[in-house]
Image 1 (cartoon, rainbow, N blue to C red):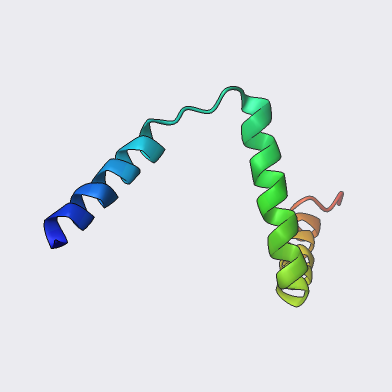
Image 2: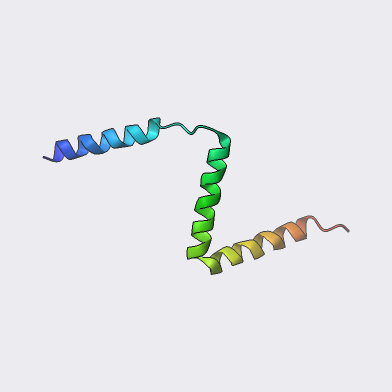
Length: 64
C-alpha cells in the first residue's frame, strides 16, 4: 500500500516539474498574484519590509 502511494506522489511531482510556463508574462502574473495574497495575509510585515527597503535605498542613493 505504501509503495502505491509513494509511486503516485512521485508521478504527481514529475508532472508538476515537467509543466512548463508559457510565457514570462504568465510568470510575472503568478508572482504578482502570490505577493498580493501574501500582503493581504501579512500587512504589517509587508509594510515593515517596504520601510526597510526604502530606508536602505534612500541611504545608498542620497544625492550628496
